[in-house]
Image 1 (tube, rainbow, N blue to C red):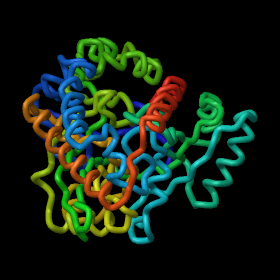
Image 2 (spheres, rainbow, N blue to C red):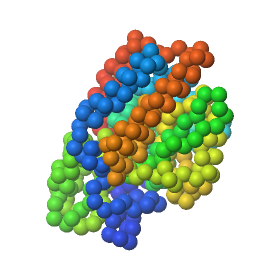
Image 3 (cartoon, rainbow, N blue to C red):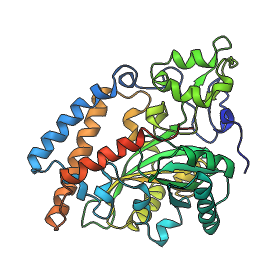
Length: 382
């Protein structure tokens, strides 16, 4: 499958009502694409209240890091700084059938060409062909995630990665639909449930036939926060004027940090989808709490529990993405996070009673510092 130019890599289609949407996804409503608090509250302000929630629950349960045992087989429970590839090794044979194929490589002290040869051999052994998705193994919010069309581009990408950093090289799933499915299973129970599902749309602007691409980005309160990243990947189109009504995707990375758009689709969860996810989750060792990020062929297929592939598993540190959905309110977002944190600490407490010991701050602080140090050196997302 050849890689299309950056501006065309995300499938958009005319909905028939003047609004352009991802192919196979519901049309986006007119008006603002982000809840008001996403547009006006900096993250450091938004997360003050959740931080107090976390502190309150920590005092109640006498552990600041109790959630690290919610998923005891995942590195620090998937709370932060964990290796994403390690979580994927917990997939059993049934779950693996739904997992996007990937390999893990580590950037060595040798020239990028030497690492390229090792990466190509690993990809060939797994039957993965270009284009692929390259992403940091210790990463979050889409930092460093990029579609890599060919070996030469992979060598360029490797040259930007710091020595010692781990990378996941993943098959590019040719489905345009994307969703985050949040699943919770109480310890001791055979089956859990889907508590949240959000459809994810790539960051994009709508042309008006008058303003340039750069002006449209700069005038959007959310998108302009990633202005430098978009300028780096769209420099050849920076002054283009998109036609009125045309959606222009800005990146292939669908991350809230970069301005991804979300629709709350929890009401679209069906018994068939819940059954399919329950079977997968049951085959992930000691998994109780987290989010499956998936690509899917069509919404109809997804609701039947078919036609989807898992591209990432996020553990205790994951959020229910519907809090960032169009039409969301700050009150509902905080209410959701409070329920999420209470459940997470409750599961952690049950696992602690089973003999699992939470990671201490002596483990968590160095992991957080390592993740942040690496994050500042990762290549531009694209």
